[in-house]
Length: 170
Image 1 (cartoon, one colour):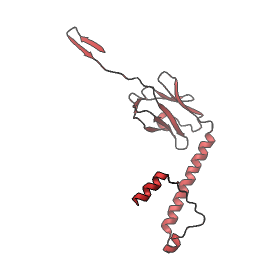
Image 2 (cartoon, helix red, strand yellow):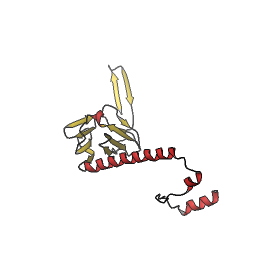
Image 3 (cartoon, one colour):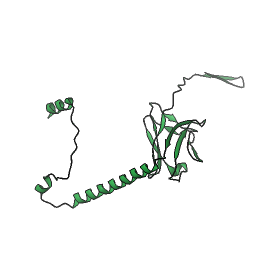
Image 4 (cartoon, helix red, strand yellow):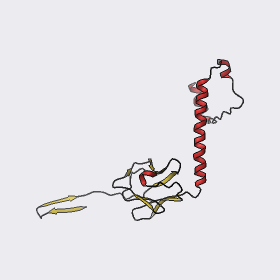
């Protein structure tokens, strides 16, 4: 409750309920090659990051007033926004306003991140090549329907419920 008065002439009373919940926001990804830090709110309540900070080495980014993350949402914060230009960072920390660590990501295995980024680039290039090959194909329809011997098709096994549902609704 809050009681207030102005020059002993006007009085007012305000009453509200405040819910204090444990913060559930964590660093869920750091992509050095794409240059971002991902934060995820794993809660059914919105989280206000006012005065929280992202820290690495001697760099510190303090979130501005009313930086609110909606429930069950992830946000990607570009390195350039928080002033991180060094892609060789070893560790990044999300800290509460008092400086206590809320979440962290250790990037000692930066080589693995670089390998993953390289694999993603190679996969994108292969997809482009496949798309180009498919658009240039002028073969006869019967040769297109034949299954190539170097293709493996993975299919998820249906559950008994899905099998029954498919039998009834087909």
